[in-house]
Image (cartoon, rainbow, N blue to C red; front, side, top):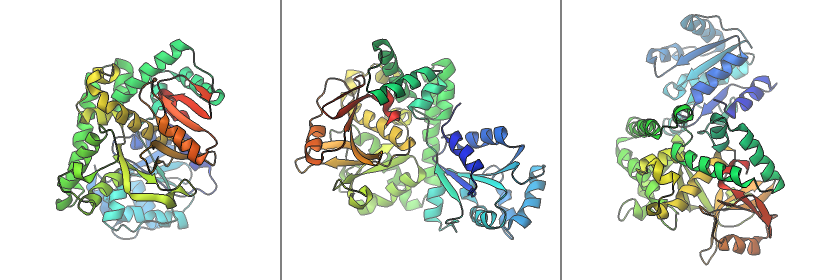
Length: 431
């Protein structure tokens, strides 16, 4: 399965400024598989250590964690010689061993010729809640996400379609009608399947949504288990309530997160730690409202106004009990959810491709779904689930802020008119 992170890992390996690498991300996004596959293709051997499947491994790091002391022991434990620049050392589920994470500082300072990658599913939670001795400035960090739409198309053997989409995006030229229709169908398949590698690997050869849903339910159960296992007793119920409510609130006309919809009388102070846990674990993301459209946008975010999106559309559909048929044919009974699902999908694509997004709202309630910085320009991105709707809010934004151009994602084919770049939803990865 072709993943975009492979290009990043290759650049990391060949960089003269390489440091130990931390790969973080939610469970089941493919971190271990991608790292091991990269190791097999680019190194003579891989020395793999998993702190979850081998709990006693942590004792190795109880005393001296200098490379000189660790390397002979690690070589013995994995039964192979660890050779500088030719062996990839992998520490998996590193959030379970604070000292292993701290050892990266000494690999960076004392043995930079050794190639080390560590992976952690709840690393953000561990570092923030357990006060880990984090190797600040001594490690490179990359976050891995579920497959985006382009990776999904690659997995289905649709490489040519992705190339055509990128060409149409750059040239603002419509795709042939038949290809556009086929790509929109694949977009709806992605909504139902999502980008979890195991789901895609099962769907690609079988097209069996029943098998996919079983995997999705298993992943969701794992997330609930993590909320109990890696959380304080007082926060477990709140975290689950916030997670459940986030899915429900995407069905509202106004998708801004409202605490009162989590529980009657709820306040920010009661649920902010629960939401922080969900964000740090990588299973949801927050998009804040930008109070002013000027750089840096981070300085103008309103921390009280935000939206919450799931990290994967397939898991969102599974959580809400939507069948694949509901999504594939956009059943009329889910009209209230279409907009929120499309928004969630676009946020997944933007996040996976390195964008930090905000949203905009006027004094009179006009709203643009996403604001991103693209090619050093602040660009508004409006999302519509159909092709027969007007982008009134987007036009108000254009009149007020005069961007270089705007992007409207919908079911319409590619085009450009009146400063608005029209992009089909299936090509959101091009943004």
